[in-house]
Image 1 (cartoon, rainbow, N blue to C red):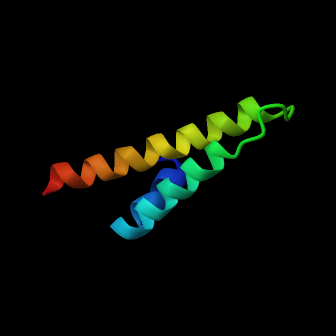
Image 2 (cartoon, rainbow, N blue to C red; image 1 turned 90 degrees about the vertical axis):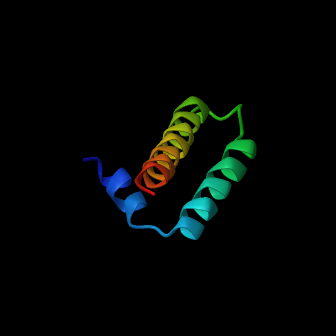
Length: 62
């Protein structure tokens, strides 16, 4: 298991929602002209995908 996924699984629902909002804000504020913009965008997209996986997994467990 990936370290980030494991870390996200320990967060509460509120903390996950906050992390998702933070990633969205950072993605929206991303300077597209920066040399590493594509890499940063990929990292933020991956974080959002992992958060979604954790949230979906919790929904299925209910």
